Length: 349
Image: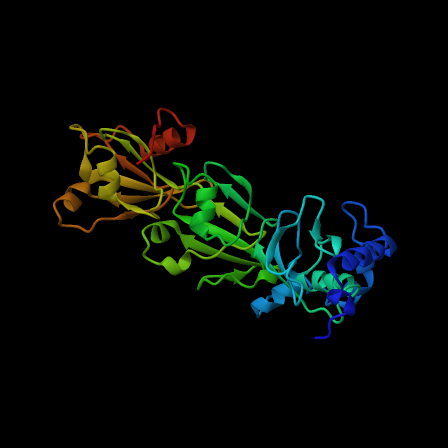
């Protein structure tokens, strides 16, 4: 690369020439407005890809990621040691300041567009400048964390963050958190790298679920994926099962990281049978539709003796253990008690 003669002048002469060049240079743009000197360079640079187009190559981020306030970039200019490889934070007005080049508006530009703009400025001092811009920290792109976390809301990515790190940033899980986490991602960042990822009906988002228990227990560390800007991380509330009737502790039990419980597990959470219980006449009341429940006979006595298999319960099931003797309490009454919340305690394990 050929360097202008200005670079070989004595220091005093160089300062004089630079001052004259600055005096003749067009005025900098007002804060928050693109620099006018960048207009031609921006028009010549590659425009961002259309939303909804997946990134087949990470290099495409150079033409799709829009820089924003608080992003940190590194600018390298060959034969300009005063600039090269020094981290620069984009200020809240969206500007950066470079030695020799002065103030340049960066917010709203892609990496390629910013490179073109810096090249345009540096041509005043260097013949055919070679400029490279890279992002060292992503700070301007939000991630929304909603649902059962202690601090739901919008959190900023600060560099590379995994799913667990984002949940920690949101204060961790609440006591009523469910067994899974749902991730929604714009397809411009590519499909979520999970086997169950699907594209939503609009064709603009990739949606996937992750088992919280598996990633928290490190059973499948590959599911602790890297979170991208504008991802939405949703932690639904845990489902519940209910135990009522002649047991030691009637109430609702949060499933938390479990998707289901067996009848014996639910009975154990309820403290076991009351002395007046009729275990062979127990019932599971399972939602059949929005208004009705089906009754499933469960012989707790035979299950506890190991003569019958344990029965899995589903979310929103009610295990009803009647009183011994004549059946005075109807299962419908048990269902009504649960629906009305009459005397129902909620237990968190």
